[in-house]
Length: 588
Image 1: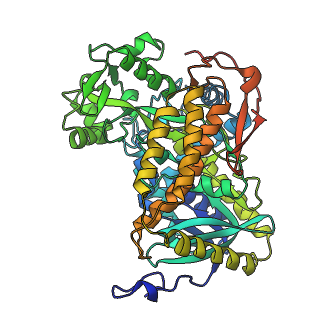
Image 2: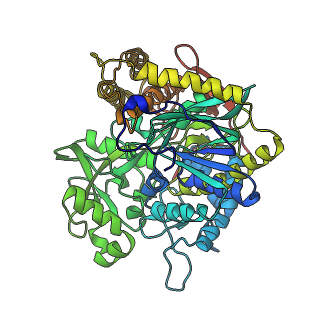
Image 3: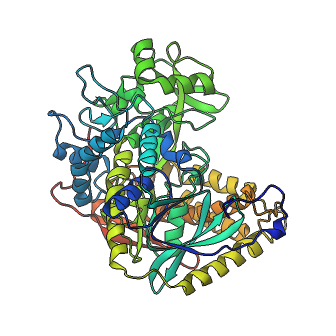
């Protein structure tokens, strides 16, 4: 039996708390699309490279599996790389770095073809070509899809492909708790083996963070329970800045009460958004694009409809309708089968006959660990990719279907860059730093956190207060007073977290322990979001300030950088990179 497994008959005290350390050329934290694409790219460059994929869940449970609508790439004669770039930059409200966007759009088509060769079952047109559908903010039909289960099929394809490489070693259900820093460079990670109840050190010449987003800092989100900003917090604590964290995307079509996403593909296929009067209300806000406007504009429009008294009322509050009835059963069953399944299972209705209740919910964060186009951070040896990172191609608002493409394109290039870095380092990191990091983490986790007794502060209590606070004051509409209040209360919640105790003292699959570690990360991430939002006194993309309603290029055409400090984060700025598209008013 592997040492990672613990026999059924055991006593917690008999489980060794630290196992021997292991070392690899590259350590990848996260087993979703970005992490697996990076692993495959690195493995292909050199079969002698040893690559560790460390994931707190089995890779096929990574949140990529929840992506529904599609992935963007220029594949048709009616489209062009320049148009894809312009749509992305305009959608970003001109906060995207244009050199990164040009790098990105040029490499998207190759990734679609590569996935095709690896076996991804793309939907097809009658002539056999890969199908493409419309998505919000895109000028033409550019979104490649596999019905409405694209993330599921992409993740399956990448996971199965990764299994061909003997030099990729998986550490499933290992929760990374800290980065090992040695001599001013990242030298791997410490991780809690959830099945074995032990702390392990996983050394690496290069480390890639690919842990996804941080949606669970909000109360109503499409994100799964594992999306707790782990990678962002790990980098932040190691001195790497988080960029544009105020730019949080709210998706307009989520199921009330659950947060389950109803894909933008439903509107891409021709679905209508209606109010309680049956009116397609987007004609009031964005008549040129209607339901295919960018997500930030649609979400704000929905809130305005609610405030005007034109929303439906239900057991979970106000909502609007997504009407697919006119599409017909054949189209819904062929192109939107999961939308129908979700509506039937979670709302008890059939979208062939009734509109689907929807409301905005947190979906994505455009911000993340500050990187360049190959994923490098300011800490040598540390890389980040996917939603964890901020390259930045998404700026102040991401266009739907660019995110999966981002995981693929930058996953490959980050993997290649990390492989090159690892091959240039002749020796593995010294063991002393790993031993010291393990000693500290063992004391912090097993003696510190687990040693606390339950008191008046509970894990659920602090977590729910944080989520409700973020929902109320750092949501779709923001103002100075609310943001300042949020910053102050988050600091108090950080203090109160020090008194959160644990009832479960077991070390094997201790979900309470995992929850405490995740909340610790989320409090750091939430503070970076709130302080970044407080300091940006303008409205741009997803960041909508009611007290500063206009975009202010003179003062804020720049990226926010949040650095960890004693107390509040330190906020700094760097310019946006402009190549050939000068900022203009964002009109559709």
